Image (cartoon, rainbow, N blue to C red; front, top):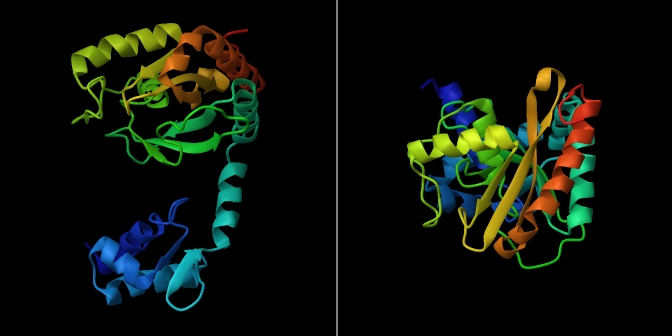
Length: 252
């Protein structure tokens, strides 16, 4: 691999370690975490700091830089569906008192169909914590949003499919039957498939030509799946409203 490409990939890997649980890293802690020499890690951090993607705060400590806000604003500005979908997600969260989210398929990883949670809302949420409250990348085969997006895109079950619990769907032949049901019903559901005690429901937000833009869903304690029909109506109404405004004529 050319040195320039290797340097960029290394810098990106370091940047991805900054998240809600790790908003600040020291040089030494990062070096220990990635198992690389301090000099190598320092080179990557220096590259990110010079570009404004990281900022140095104190001796040998780093945080995300302000330039990321500019990049994120440009990204969301390029997605006309994001603002109305985000508003719908917030309404769902307030109306259900559950963790609501927006997810998309990662177009840069067509082989494994990575699912990315691009927004979530906990407005008014009650009840115990659920799996995935802080995760950006979700297991496609073990989450409602992942199953929905995989099925509607016609993708196979990612292999190997990790079994997170004894309820996780891992068999390709079983997936084909479930994917067909998702396409016919227009929604996906999970129960204890990613983590015991956590379930999920998801429906699609569509645009012109009925293109699937994102999954709108909720994550909830499994016992609350007894409210499945009511929750699906809330989700579908919210998704249909956004989809109609974006040019879809399905469901209305």
